Image (cartoon, rainbow, N blue to C red):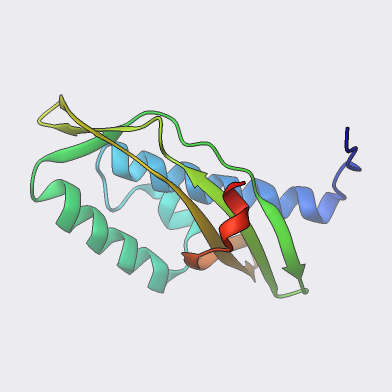
Length: 138
C-alpha cells in the first residue's frame, strides 16, 4: 500500500479550483447551459469560448444532454507561482447521452487529460486542456 502525504494548503486550493472547473463543465453539459456561472468562474475566457461553442454545437442545437457522474483522479505534474499543470483521467464512462430527455444508449468515455491552470486574483482558472499522458488512466 502506497501512502501519500496530505497536500499542503496551496495544493489544496489549486485542487479545489480545479475540481470546481470540472463541476461547472459537467453541470454545463448536463443542463446544457453554455453560460453556466460556475464554469464561467473557473475557466479562462478563451477556454470558455471554446467550451461554449462545443456545448452549443453538440448539445443545445441537436437537443441533447449528458447525465451521470464524472470521476477524476488529478495529479499535479508541475507548479509555479503562476501556472499549474495537472494530469488526470476524465472518466465519463458512467455518463449517458440523452436526446430530448430519453437515453440514447451512448455512454461517455475515459480519457487522459492535461489541464493548465493559471493564477488569477480570485484563485486558479483552467486555461487549457488537451490529451494527457496515456498512463493517467491506468
